[in-house]
Length: 228
Ligand SMILES: [Zn+2]
Image (cartoon, rainbow, N blue to C red; front, top):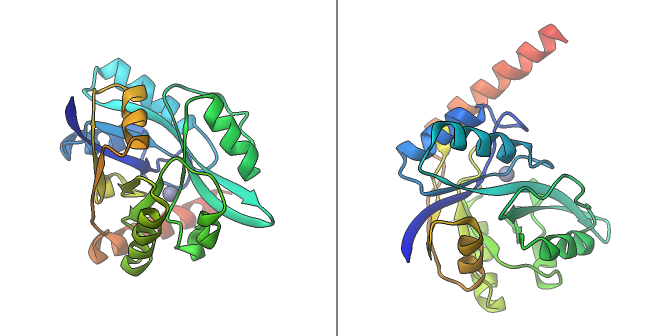
């Protein structure tokens, strides 16, 4: 078994990320990641593109198919990372309980994202009521206090925790990450998370990186406005 460095929450231009999948993957290799999931909002398309690129270039990276689904439960909207061993199609439901069942049937993991960062669609106290395979206890873009709360509740519930960057540009990949003890193969990696063979490495997006990101985002938005 190996200790695999993994970032399982990353965005690309398939949703609101600023960099294409290719740049994100090259950055992952530069940062020494062994495992990555591209978790664009409400689509597995980023992961699908990543799988193609990894295969074409023969990159030494294990891809976990991912999607950050905006789920709903009792009128509340919240984000869940759905991580799958293979491409599961795009017929996933948004209702939280049905989504959990859908994930289970496909050996995918259901991991509430930045649960106490409720301004960014964290599930908050619903964490106590909904099923989950693990919890994102550290998100590099969430305030530290809210990450600490997620850590505390995961411990209380006896759930494994993962740490992720939630990168929206290639440079931010692996700002926070997990180390998973498993063979370098998607199914084994997901199983190891559920069994708790995972350690988190905390980190936060640096203020200077964040300022550059916001600038790039504004420029992109302005560009879109011009060419609409
Ligand atoms: Zn995200």
